[in-house]
Image (cartoon, rainbow, N blue to C red):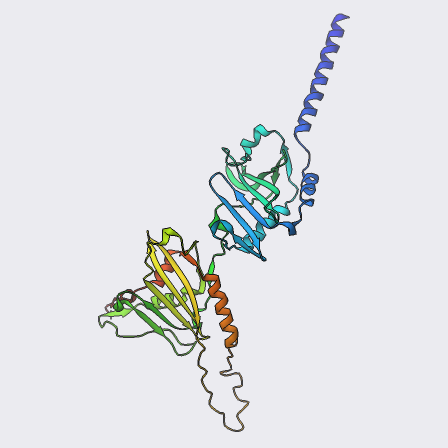
Length: 373
């Protein structure tokens, strides 16, 4: 009898232990994060977001919305890439419900979810209100590893004011380096819109002058050419196309003390058929290229068209009917706006663009190839 009671007590103990273990695990692990994530974001009004601060263990960047323009405050208030900011805000505020893995703080390290600058911390994205107050903070942790491969299976996140660790189905890239958020495009000038290009060097023998009379013509090199060498036409083409997609890598204030030693001794001048004149001064330091950009406007001369013979007014009606995109007053206002945008800034640009802007005349020629029968 005593043995039966002992067996019964042992059985009850095992059952109670199992129930306790089940309940303890259930309190640590929530079945679904859908209700939680929905509740968190329902309290956030996207229209109230006036700034974004991103921090990791090494860097910090502040993005601000001023007069409907996003700027990189940590880089002097230079315009930010709106597309990147929109993508970040949309991806975070439209997170699909994620799986809740744990609430245990001692496991944050495993998921890369310690707040920086702690070891193994993630990057933190703070949404800021009109006065810079923090509306919400989200820590972006490690990407989930699928087998032996990293990434492709989601990312771990948690909210600053909550304990839950979520696994979401996508990866969110929020870099804390300021230049990652800059608006990179500087100029977008089609090569056929350029009437002439002049590249001025300290040594006048290295100056380059390219001209053409009409848009459909090719840019031609002016001046004498060496008789024992031939022209590299692809170099001419590269000089003409450099403004088509000129991008920056970083930006600095014109008054930055680190730029004082740069000699902006090369000038690239591109005159467009519409009257715009781009003037780009360039210099080099530590194998990096830096430029300043200015734009002028000169009202283009309008050639008088020949009168057509009677009875032929309708012929070739569309011929030579190119009208200026804007009237001179509008073009002048547009140029002034662009000058305001570029004024006070020095841009670091990729070396391949810098080399084109600083091309020397001697670099346009190569040894004449021997003709083979």
